[in-house]
Amino acid sequence: MYIFKKNSLRHFNALNNFKKKNFSLLGNAEVPGDKSISQRALIIGLASIGQTVIKGILDSEDVYYTLKAVEALGAKVDINKNKKTLTVKGVGLGNLKSPKKPIYMGNSGTGTRLLIGLVAGSNATVTFYGDESLSNRPMDRIINPLKKMGAIFIFSEEKKLPITVIGARKKGFTMPIRYKSPVSSAQIKSAIILAGLTAKGTTQIEEPFKSRNYTEVMLKKCGVHINSKISKKHINIITVSGTSYLKNCNFNVPSDPSSALFIVVACLITRGSKVKVKNILYDSMRLKVFKILKKMGGIININKTSVDTCEIIAEHSILKNITLNKSDTTPLIDEFPALSIAAACGKGKMIMKGLGELRYKESDRFKSISEGLRNAGVQVNTIEDDMEIIGTRKVLGGNTVVAQNDHRIAMSFNLLSLFSEKPIKVIGNESISSSFPRFFSTLKSLKK
Ligand code: S3P
Image (cartoon, rainbow, N blue to C red; front, side):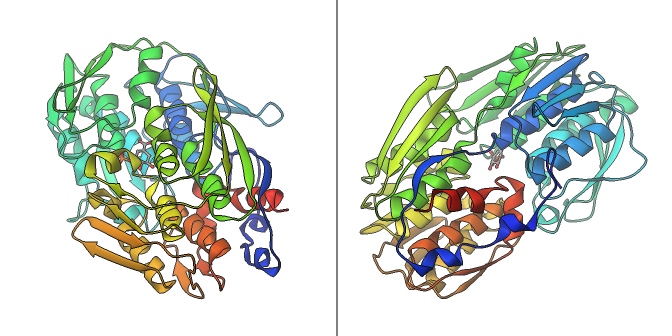
């Protein structure tokens, strides 16, 4: 189920008929709204007083479940199907409703972790649960700091969903903390920031490298005193002051660079192709993957079209693999599956270091990528958290990949199937509805 349209299985026809004759991908492609910004717009709308109008929201399953959760926590959401806008009437900070029933979050890690943070700073009691993939993802990384802020958690021994959160303000108040996160994670950082909004004083978070910062930027727009600075050792230090209310403001959601990447990689690996994707979020961190592909010889042009958007034009290219160190790979957390496919079709050895966090995504992506590529006949070597992919012009294919509820794994191996000699069968294409429901129809519309 989505927000504006009903889910339709027709979108999930795989690309096997692409194989029947030679084809190129040509034309303009539309990519849906950014997933991170869409979910934050809903959550911040819930925590504000007054109305938040959201334009360009991603119409996908993850966002749908976050929207349903925001409603269950007290917001009133009006959907304008013609204008494709949403209006969220918020309940204000700390006034969240305690729903009678547990809230189902589907596959959405971002929605779940951010809402757990918001509830942790409230006076509500909420139980969250999710699908099989989300139920296997670590939650201790947010539970530990949020407990220090006064929230109470009820969970199984493994500290995974289902989890009940009793907000810190149920029995007392939200404590400001100083927290050094062992990993750079926008979800951990955002959960603490959202809880810190109701704290008496200033909460400080440190992360080893800067992760995406939409929570900080969007809250600042709503009048929150939130600042960040980067130390000489690249440590990102964020401070947020507790406040009594969030000024309501409207959000425009540009298209998602991580979804655009799948179209760009499809174009780079398919002979005779040239594609333009428009209205993409202009954020140097999220665009870094395109710079890496350019360094590999990808013919890619990025043209800025407004303060926060750009268009990306890509052409079929012969890619030459390179080495990426940990500092290069940290901001590419969502981009590895597609980048690995580009590397498998490139020339030479691609070395990618420091990929440990890939194990904690919608699936263990380190394993899904290495196994899926090996089964398709690509040589992959792994040493601890590093991966080497030996590119080849002849990817055999003919294998089956089980997507394990991981949209990016499903899309990636569908892309490799465009290039491989025999088709690759992907089981679990429905997972693509988390972020890019029109993935197949978009590629089909470009097929010439
Ligand atoms: C996201 C943060 C990232 C990313 C995820 C979206 C967010 O995870 O992988 O798809 O919107 O906060 P991290 O928590 O590892 O940064």
